[in-house]
Length: 135
Ligand code: FEO
Image 1 (cartoon, protein in one colour):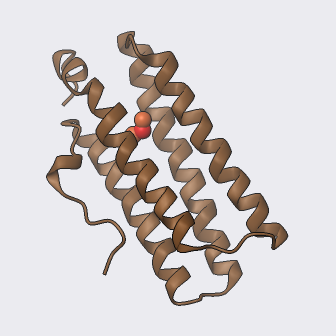
Image 2 (tube, rainbow, N blue to C red; image 1 turned 90 degrees about the horizontal axis):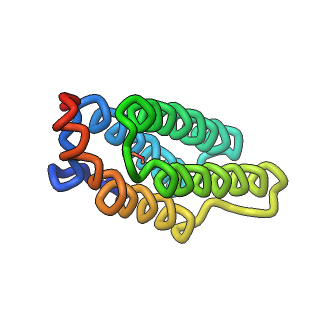
């Protein structure tokens, strides 16, 4: 069973961004499977790197639209992004040092952060972006 099952309540009504969120869900699910199947540390490390890289890519896209449309909640939204990137980079550093193992708690943190961020923070831009013609 996947850790996160995508459903339409996660949609932010912008196709490009929904596609990116689905990819983030898929990477987190892949990491969860790797953890459950006790894959080699190298395999899990690569998936964590993939999660970091794609999260950065996704945030750049969202923030590009914030700047383009002068989104009023840019500062607080970007801060959430920066905090999350710092957190997952810390996780990776500790994982590489061997001082942290992937655990259900960490997987739940990733899952909860993503879902809460999409549903609580990202969704706030839906109607704003839609009115600017971004759908
Ligand atoms: Fe979809 Fe604000 O991250």
